[in-house]
View 1 (tube, one colour):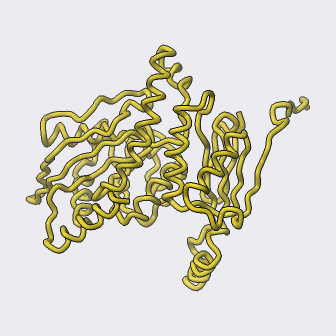
View 2: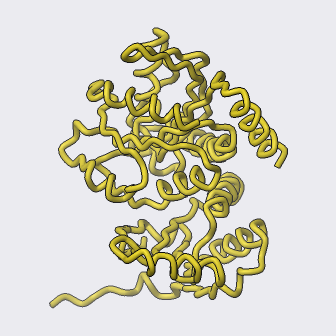
View 3: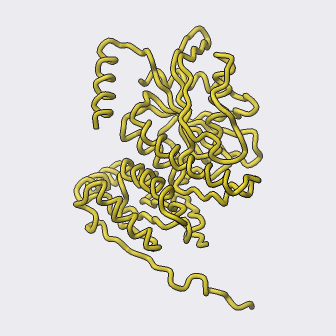
Length: 212
Length: 132
């Protein structure tokens, strides 16, 4: 409750003085949608350093990771913000799923335990975001309840949202299906792995920042 | 034609919960009630839907339990709502007013233990449960 009040008063003060400093943009989404790959791409391009490691094994990011003062210059405009890369949100964690990726039983159990804590942390951080980039795998069914719950929570907290349809390089990618699932939001298709369509992404990111 | 083996679905328990059963509950109580049914290996069909912050709380509390309760892997969750796209403004208003007066009882929420429900396949108009 204190966090909500603090967040609310900070927004009021910021809007009174039209200050957009220390903006926090969160990267949210289900596991393995490419949040850290995208955050790494942005950080590499504009700070020269990555934010975290990526892997094919789900729940690679199990703690919220930050990169302060990322300054993006795009078509003469400048945007400075803090990237908050969050662990993927899921409703179930089964350590046995990790065994299929070659992890030993102990490693898999440890990963599962850390993943559950990461999900709790991600949800708690929702209140602190100024804007959120929801990163979804455009080759997956967009109607998953986790996606709907994340976006529903952002709307309820009046946090501006940009939906990123990642992995457009995959054969099964379907941006139209994703746009149909979330017609109220701007959806931008990219491939963080191939760095494709990043110009359009940055355009959308500036539009998102304007809504704060 | 081969014989259908339905031995695996013996003992499957479904708890249909009218919206009135949770209507007056606070967020913690509502989530606790649902999770206690899930821990009893029941699939809950709630006549209505949880608010977004309740869904988030349900996920948080589920994760805390996965961490502490042996063999509990989490939940599968899906909500199906009437598709108002393409409906007239009058119909949307009518739905909105009804929703604000009696709560969102036109939706159906399916929540079950991940150990029983392998996957919920959802599109805007239907949900399909795949049992383990």
